[in-house]
Image (cartoon, rainbow, N blue to C red):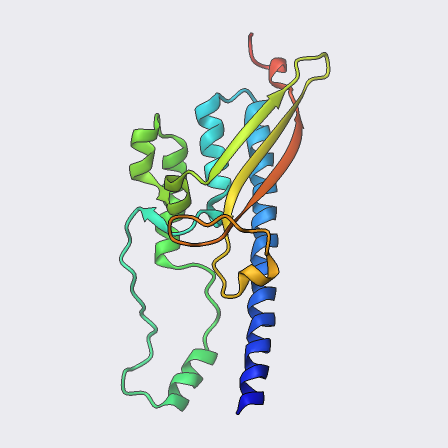
Length: 202
């Protein structure tokens, strides 16, 4: 029994740790993508508010729980309630995988409306997420106005480590938020040419 407990704990530590590393790696890639969207938005002449929205939309995968729109969570599996375990398994395996849900469709439909919003007060009622509200995501843009100007965008996030045993794989994540969740600081970067002067009047 003791040996089994030791083995189970070791396996759980490894599996949860690998999963947390994969989540962090994916989150880092999302930040690089968000930085590229910020640089592109600035390079075509968008103002600060438009850049903010471009970053927020790009970083949705890192943004945690959706706060707005509020969509009731429901599960409609289509499996009869009186089905035996074997019948339920047959029905489940006979289906074609679905990559989206009604909630995801509603969420996606809100993105163009969010991008068209005029200010933060209106936008937060169209689309909002836990990490947006918390303010854990920020960005900075450096512009050089030389003859061949470039724009460098940087997106930062205090990324939450929510998997069990994450502290063993990220011992430097000593900072914890108000919910006692450890967080690490991650940065995504991108560089773009500043070519807005080609088609915008100064």
